[in-house]
Length: 128
Image (cartoon, rainbow, N blue to C red; front, side):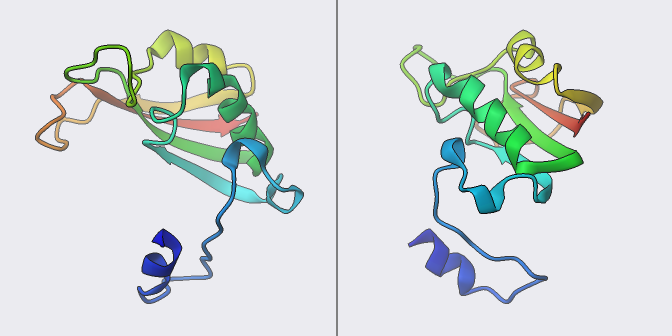
């Protein structure tokens, strides 16, 4: 499994790996994290689950916690069936601005060869 492979690497801190459903966080994972890092989860779930995802990010974080996300603004050869499902800035603002303040945002100038410049945006948010 992915957990077994991750645990094969030397620990760099106090990390631990947990199998679970992020959209339905167990109570032990609510309000305990300083950071949530997003890269390819939001684009993989169905667009109708995005509000539940945003709520889960809020639930996972401590007050003042941080959310660092790589949002896929464009997906090459996207036919609408996904995944991956691109997400617009307007939609991420609608999902997160009510509970988060944006700290920084930028478009990476380098990425994977299959992702053209401008296809991704990195956004750092802080929970209000």
